[in-house]
Structures are given as C-alpha cells and as structure tokens.
Amino acid sequence: MRQALPEVPMVAYQVSGEYAMLEAAAKNGWLDRDRVVLESLTAIRRAGADLIITYHAELLAKLLER
Image 1 (cartoon, one colour):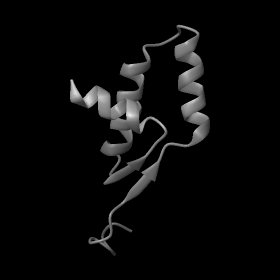
Image 2 (spheres, one colour):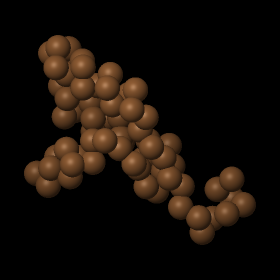
Image 3 (tube, helix red, strand yellow):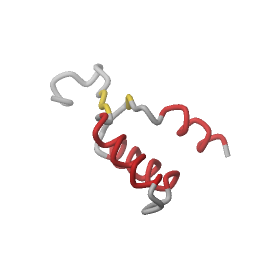
C-alpha cells in the first residue's frame, strides 16, 4: 500500500479497548502509565504510521513537553 500511494500519509488509531486496558492497569498500579503510553504509541509509529489518533493525545503532548 505504501509503495502504491507514497504521497498519502499512513494514519493509525489506538483503539478504545487498548486505551481502556492501559488506563485500568495503571489505575490498579500494575504498570507505569506514562511509560506504557509512550511505548504503545512509539510502537505504532515504528510500524509506519505518519499520524496517530489516540485518546492519549493530551497526555502524550505533556509527556513530550518535558
């Protein structure tokens, strides 16, 4: 797909189920929310996404601001 339409950006979204799973696990103290959000979104980017749609957008902006 990427080779056929190189000028079209590859857009991915983090599904609500993954968002809910990360939030619930963080709330229960099972993981470090900030680190896992960064890792999850970094994985999507490394997979080739030019743009990521996520419920974590506001948190990500704050984390990247540091």
